Image 1 (cartoon, rainbow over the protein chains, first blue to last red):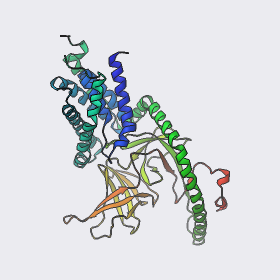
Image 2 (cartoon, helix red, strand yellow; image 1 turned 90 degrees about the horizontal axis):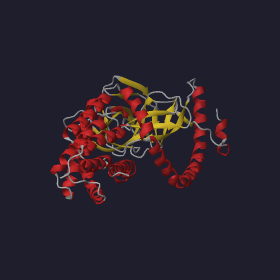
Image 3 (cartoon, rainbow over the protein chains, first blue to last red; image 1 turned 60 degrees about the horizontal axis):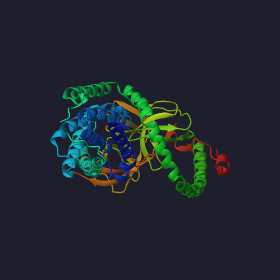
Length: 163
Length: 293
């Protein structure tokens, strides 16, 4: 099995199992780590912006099937997030947990803010309160949970250093 | 130094992003009903097998423990039911004697939650019933704890999408059980507020909030649905304050049901003050209530 296929399958399992089984156990009220974003960050750090954009689109589309009235919004936000992380990887020092955790937290924050803007636009929902009470704590939580997972991915040689 | 593969050149990467964004935007530009049907189709292919496998594993793990609890509950409920049937019979006889209209029974249809998402943005779940259901838009959906949402889109004779109370812009007409004060329940990013309660009204922490039979409102009020059955548990008042600059009290409500662990829900089909289950009770469970008028 090629390395790319193995990495992609492992990350699909991480995203699905994490979001469906682990996230409910780790959630603190409405605040829960986003395992599909962590999987996307590992994919983009390992394979670059091309895989980040396509992987983000696929993961976003799968997530959107559970929120059908906003079909496409998750795919939009995640493909952009995956692309940007893939582009940023050459400027990052992979191996430092603080850098990796901060990167994922920033990615989650940007993704969720964009999603929230889209959601407010399409369904006239609130913006500022969920931004403060849910989005920011969730982003920090996702960054925290991502550190051991990214270290594990590095140990399994899923992260490729930029040439 | 190894050269980059062709698919990792900047131009190809940019092209991939642009294609993804265009497709996403095209999906978002579809009418809402179209988006829901497309998501339903995609979900059937992409995630349904996985969710079914996970749910099956979970069900097996908990079925024994649940059976013990349910047996005890059934025994207690049978006793309560006998009393309730007597009360109902008396009430119906009095209503008839007064020339009032007979009270109909609504049916509770058990449905399994097939798809859900644990996220701050989750607003809909897909449910499926064992048999065909007479779905109608806006039918209330409850759990054993209380109201969770209403039917939003029917996708088949056994499946439908349920809009949860956490959905942005959704409002539910409620009342306080103790005082009968009416109010409108709104979701506010994970919390619930009970609006339109006057600042001089008597509201206490711990007051139970139940549904009222006034119509539910969606969005800016341009879409009205049929009313809910009165008295469905919705939540409990968790915080009350009277900001000096406002005419109304600020009332925070803790929901009765959990929206992150929905497994089985009940759709209320028909209207009426009495609820009966769709599946007939087993023979040994039948009591004198069957003879009740």
